[in-house]
Image (cartoon, rainbow, N blue to C red; front, side, top):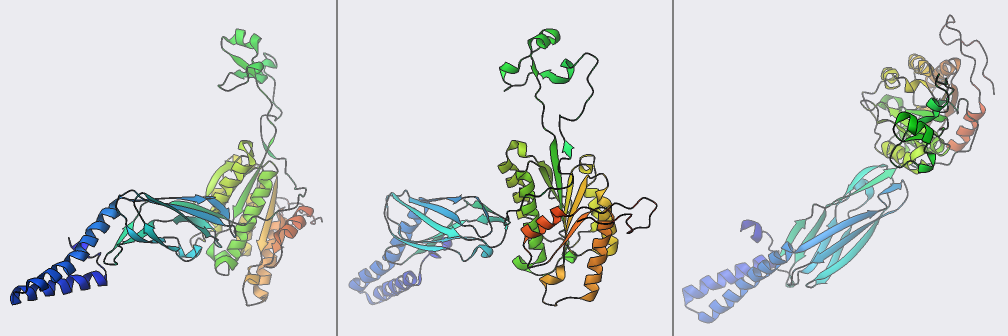
Length: 440
């Protein structure tokens, strides 16, 4: 009862108080006319409350977010459908949807003349400027009666999800060292003693084309056998993203970390479109996504999986370069192209990163000059540290490019593709000393 009465507005409470006072005065004074007036004043808000409560039970709402996935700066539209299935009008609806503050102010609508069997579609736009995975909703509706005596609040449980992915820049097509490394069924293989048939025939699987059935092998094995089609050599690329708080500067969307996420997204999409199986690895208490996003299932699917993983990447205070070798361990990690997007690296940390190239056909590094993301200007100590770290990577055979804040990623990628790694120093050489010069 107390919850119901809390829905009375100031006008409703005023009518109820005046009506109650009039009833008491009429009883004490024995005035029947005043009693009738008091009863009328007290009954009106009570009736309005009953009508509003009955209407609130029959109110329904649903939503959809289109498209459910957008890039930073693109627009998404939220569609709300409100319905009143009661036979009694609800009066005025005050509608408010709940969205995170990073997506803008909460949208509010006023719907009047909400009669029985009412249906109304409401839409509003979201223009996100920060990547992430957001919950849109729930919807809150305030129901008022026609006399303004009652205002009841109802929250719906239905919510939607909006994924805001990083901006993807188109990169030029350049020749990358080791771009055809990876795995696949077209590797050189030995032919079994029984002949080529054992190497090119396999058991039938549901969905196989019946025209590929090998009848002689079927009769020999006693089960349906088909000719196996050669699969192309699969190029693979691992993108290592530095998310250490200590490795980046700046705040919000203008930070060096956000630039790094955008760079990783652009490089990953570019490689996926070129046929690479791409995976993202970062120190997020482990790896955000150690799965290979295989373009064989469709370049679009591979890009979606990669961008979804990058959408939720956050800076990590406990991240450490020392954990990266464990993240890249395993037989599969030893093959393919390795692309690193790094923040600030000390010389000691650069030696750890340099060792990650072992077993990889090629390694490319984008090292950020993080001081350009601050207002402090050039710092000699930071420049010495940057130069030393870059030299360590280049001596270990990495292709390295230094990225400054105002440089476009497409230009950097083109310069990176034109470089050729230095000849790696022999095992007996001192650390950081190369046996050859960098070409290009």
